[in-house]
Image (cartoon, rainbow, N blue to C red):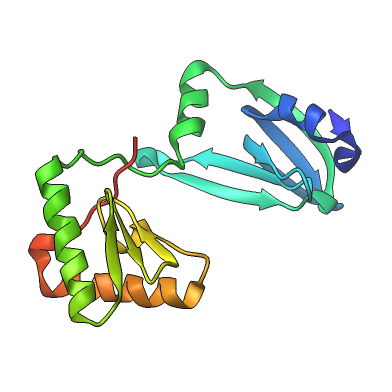
Length: 174
């Protein structure tokens, strides 16, 4: 059982990750769950409880409120794996190069039709020099530090998907 949680620091907190814990917060609050991670700045704990049908609930216990942390049990291999993969994006099948080329061309033509300056740079599309679109060229594949341009281009690509369902995009990850 550990009190003075926020004083421990990241090197001690890491020992609690992937364990089932009971957390006392405040005078009469108690939280239980699998400790997924600890925020290194605020000492806040992220607890996960697995539900039926493979679902999980997530609870954040603010670090300043934590009075005591008690380890109830260590995670077995299956639980550790569930904790690791619970919050990763779903994998989608890889698209063949021809399909990616078709999508890239469709998005480029749509942007040009809407008077948006776009150039192909290898496998990527560059918009106005401030936004990059990567495969498979959906709204979620846009990257820019300019939030206004990012939002407008994402909405424009979404409107393309809605008008031409055959160009529907899916995200991919390795």
